[in-house]
Structures are given as structure tokens and as C-alpha cells.
Image (cartoon, rainbow, N blue to C red; front, side):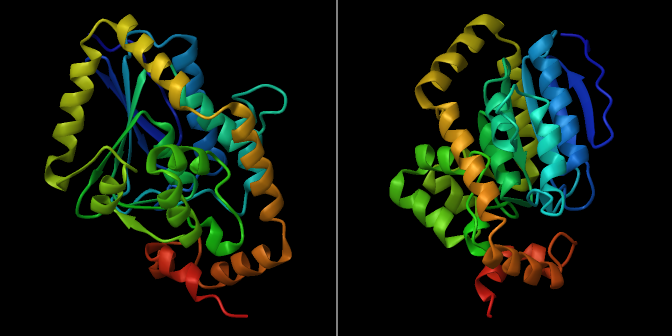
Length: 282
């Protein structure tokens, strides 16, 4: 298969080889899901819906060795939401509904995770069909409960279906970090792979799938999605709840406290956010 698509984005590096589109998130050291990154992700997904050409598989990874994506840009929620809204119709102005669209994109999608994937960054990975992670350094978490909010972009829906009720409540209510081995054992991700083997493993799998006749693969994905994905009304409801919770005074107080200690900047707090959210004191 030849290179047929030539995407150019400010915050995503891309290349196409043998039917596989490799998309590397490159939006600062934390890869926050903010205006630029959401805008470019929307454009990429829209292009795959319009005409994927010879692209059969999308692999999403990160240019940062420490962060797949730290979380959404909490200082620009209305702005990135406006970008996400461009992916849907009326009533779908949320990151969750954009990621719901990503989950149904007519190619196979694989998240290759090194470093931290928390909050919206974890929800981005969960919207992909498969997640493979570096055993030595990948961390996953939904930290929102630690601030007084809840996952609003599909985390509740995906984790409940993947982990089951009890483990999903543990993951969401604890707001803690899960390393790759534990995430694998819980069913959060497909596999934890040694870091040195991760690139080769994912590339071989993606190229293998890309070499199959596409209609059968697409039909299988549609059938599995129809059986497993949440109804869009549930995703919309989570988004509305998230928006209301982050406006509460107690949530704002906790977020302001975290911001004063280094939230959304490279440093110790972001590296150990699962611990930091449990240390708030009035």
C-alpha cells in the first residue's frame, strides 16, 4: 500500500506506511487536550470519515516519553469544547461526543501509550479500539473525583464496560493511578508490553490488520461497537454532569489549590497527580 494521505497539523505529527496512519501527539510536554490538539484531532478524524483512502489502521502515540496526554486543559474548557463541537451536530458540543465519534471511525484505531494517560487523555485512549502500553512507565487514571468532578468524556462508559461495576467504581472513585500491569489485569488495556518491544509489536499488529480486505474488518468493528459502546445519550449526560461539577465552588477550590502547586505544568505534581489529589486540606 502506498502513501495516499498527507496530513499536516500543528500539534500532531503524521506519517502513512503500508496502510497505517501513525499520529504522534506533539502539543507540549504534557500533551494537554486543549484548543490546538482537539482542533487537530477533529480534523484528522473528519478526514478519515470523509475518505480514509488506503488508510486501514490509525495508531496514536505521543512525542513525550512522560505523557501520552496528561488530561484536558482545565484552563480552556469552553475553548476546547468549541473545537470538539465541530465534529458533531447540534447538542453534541462536548469532548465526549467527539471521542464517541472517534470510537466509530471506519478504520481500526490503536493507542500506543508511554507515560501518563489521565483524565481526558485516558478517555482518548479508551476511545481507540485497542490500547497497548509500556510496562515500565505507562500510568492510567481518572483523577476527576479527587477534584469533586467526574469523568465527562466517556471514561465512565468505557471503564464500566471494560472493568465491570466494582472495578470501575474503584478506578473512578479512588482517582488513583493504575500502572500498566494492573491496568492489563483489570481489562483496562489490551496488553502491557516491555517498552523496548512496544513499537515493533504495535507496528506489526497494525500492518497485519491493514493488509486484510477492509470491508470484513470494518463490518466486524461495527458489529462489536453496536454490542459494546454506550448510547450517545449516556455520553451526553456525562458531559453535562462534568460541566456542572467543575463549576461548583468546592471543585474550583480544589482545582485552584492544585494549580497553585503546579497543575498543568511539568513537574512533581503532574507526575504524581494520583497522590496529589488526595492531599487537599481546607
